[in-house]
Length: 517
Image 1 (tube, rainbow, N blue to C red):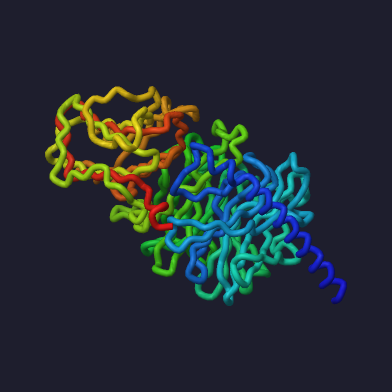
Image 2 (image 1 turned 30 degrees about the vertical axis):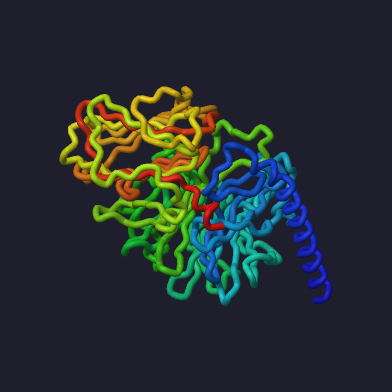
C-alpha cells in the first residue's frame, strides 16, 4: 500500500510540474497575443497558445466552468492540455490555471504525433467536480481510452490511477473518443463518439459510481449519409424530447448535426424522429452543452474549423469559442439556439435606434460607421415590404470610431467586405466571405422555414474577426471567422426589387466588458 501511495504521489507531482510549465508558457505569450488586431474582445479565448474544442462545460458552485482543448506552448495543435476559464454570467470570463496535462503513458507520445488529454465532459458528484476525457496516443494499443480526474475545488485535479474504460468495445471501430457523461434517475450514463463500416456512432455506457462502466451498445448510428465518425456526441433532454448533437466527419458540407427523438434507457437506444443543422456557417464545431441552475440548456462551440487557412504565423494564439447560446425546441420541432440574455449587459454606446421604422427605397444604401465590436438588431415588417432582397455588408472603413454616424452612399472604405443577403422568393439567407479579408473564401446558405414568410428578425454580432448571425431567435444561425485588415468598420444596408420596411432597428458598440470590469 505504501509503495502504491508513493507511486501515486509521484505521478501527481509530475502532473503538477507539467501544469506549472504550461501555465508559465501561457503567461509568457499573453502580452504578445493581446496586441493582435484579430483578437476578439467579448468571446472566450485562451490568453495565448492554441485552443479548440470546448470541454467540461458545467455550472458548479455558482460559477460556469469552461475547459477547452489547449496547447500552451504555441499557436498550433500539439499534445493536448485542458485550459480553463470561469464566469458568473457566461459573458465575462476569468482564466484559471491549466487543468490537465498529458503525463501518463496512455496520454503522451511523440510530440509529432497526436496525443494528449483530448475532449470530454464534467459532472458534479458528492461535491466534487469530476472530469472525463479521452487519453490518446497515436499508434498505441489501444490508441484511445477514457480517463477521469477529480477535484474538490474545481481548480486542482487529481487523475484516477488508471483509465476507467480501457478501450473500445470493437477494436475495428473508427475512433473512440469525446465522452459526455450525465445522470439519469440515479444512474450515470456516457456517450462516446465512434464509427464503423462508414457510419458514425454514439456508444452508450452505464455506471453506478462513475468508475466502473458497463457497455450498453450503440445508442445511435448514422443512416449512411451522416458521416463515418461522430465526434463530440452530446445527448440531453429538452422540451419533452431527447436531443443528440454530433460533429460528423466526412459528411459532405456538414460539420454539425442535431437529431431530436426519444431515448429508451431500458434498451439503451435513441430513436431519432427529425434532424437538422445547428449552425450553417463555416466556423462552428465540437459543440457541447450544459444545464445551468435555472434549467437552461446552454451551448458553446469552437468558432473555427479543421482545414481552415490558419491565421497564426507567430501571433501567439489561435482559436476562440462562440457566444454562449440557449437551446430551445421550436413549436414545429426544430432546434433553435439564441444568444444568452446576459449578452445585453455588453451593450455600450447606442449608435442607432430607430423604433419608428426605417424605409429603404429600392437601390438606396444606408451606412453606419462602427467599431470592430458591435451588435446589430432588426425586425423587418414583411407585410409592408415589397423588396425581394436585403443586402447587409460589413466592410472595412477608414473613418475612426469618433465619426460614428449614419451616412448615405459613403465610399470611404476598403475593398474588404462580408456580405449577407436575405432573398425573399427563395426564402434564404446567404453569408459570403469571398472578400472578407485574408481568411478562407466561401458562400454559406441557410434555407428558412415556412414560418419565416411571416416574420424576419435578425441579430448580428461582430467581434473584430468573427460574425454570428441569428435569424428569428436562433431558428437559423450562421457563424464565421473573418480577417479584415482595416481597423474600422461600416455596416451598409440596401434594398433591391422594392421598398423594405423595418419595424425597428438598433445598433450598439459592444464595449460593456470594459465598463463593468
